Image (cartoon, rainbow, N blue to C red; front, side):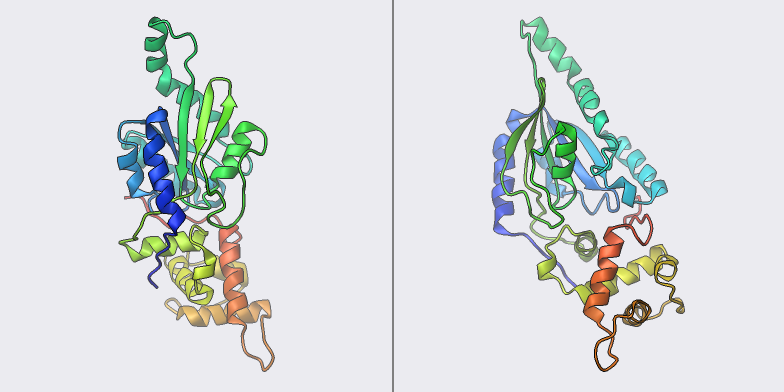
Length: 282
């Protein structure tokens, strides 16, 4: 299942980011804590190569706590400031401004010595689609400034948002990269909703998700749906068992695979199968 999704507005977004990067001091990158590496746009490192960096491991409430701690350590060793966050509850959001100011402290002091009384901190906030960026911004600001949604591609244009008197954010639309060289990256992004669901075959996607879960969290499906099956059972057979348990039966006694697949994917995204991390730390 080779997944590729790069609609035209993402090309415009990339160009806009390149044009505006000189206006900011800091780049704040949101990653999905369930797949910190797969959700990290490889183009951002080049774009922000001369900027201070903060990584936010968002949706940490949905991820495996042990794995999130490993990823936090990993990114800190790469030289990033790292925050574990949950944009829905607001966890971790209060850490953003103090960390940003500490990164700016030297520059602010230098400019004040030259006579600049007021030195605002300007940051660009970036991330893949549906990573929770708009929800985080609204929590950060304390009011609804950014449009939110549970589908990829809600934000379409840039906007400057004043968070505090001395802190401004440049919000940008969620952006992927033109080609996923590793098929597993596209799959993981699709599992979590970063790829437009309308272009996906949900039954096939659910079968691939079952394969990942059985390898990484072998009890997750069995515990959630009360199913029993042998290790290595075909994913389509596991999906059939889930459909039976949920009573998703069409006329004639046939399993409604589409409905079963949609429920499995939705419940995975909502952490009803447990706190799961699909990327393993390098």
